Image 1 (cartoon, rainbow, N blue to C red):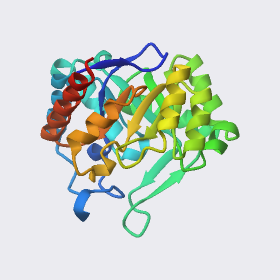
Image 2: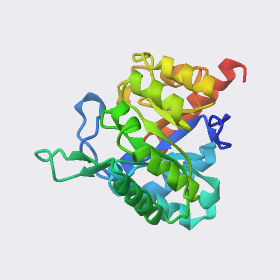
Image 3: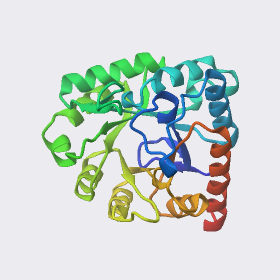
Length: 273
């Protein structure tokens, strides 16, 4: 696995990161071909997924309070050590600002957002308990679309910086929804998470701006929420974009993770790295 700097944070992450939403939640997710969301994977399948991640060289895991029980499951697996390498092997990225209610939204579930400093602090402290750790490498604000207001006015980013000063967080940023918000985040954050895939290139300007400032870039929806017609081409496209630190791919399948890791290796060979 190609390992890249996460901007100027001092962290180094695999070109492919593991998204964990499908370890913790079944409602409100996008599946290809209108596929009905499957049940959560059992403990053995979750362990096999993390074991496979370690095998193929993935070291970045992306999670969030809005991902149901994903943080708790991930914390238990990392605490097990052994094959998984223990906590120090992993770069953990979690989020704050969004909660997901499985019972809301007429059975589909619904999100609730709170970017007040107190809510952000409580969210991060709870994530630390769930993850069974004393620090998280990256915390991103989980935007509801009001990127600029969240960054400028909510006080959430200032609270993350205070948590960083306390040593609970290493790097802070925003998972943005729009180009304008991404560009602002690239000015004031350590890390920005953007959408980038062959069918959606509008946020390439954010990637370029972040790279110019030494800001780490994590890519979400690189496979268009499972709708990319050619997964290999999509992985190669994203990882071939200068400035991208890591592409987050959410899966509960060890086989799919292996396949995406193979595509990532091809992307590196194709770039001559």
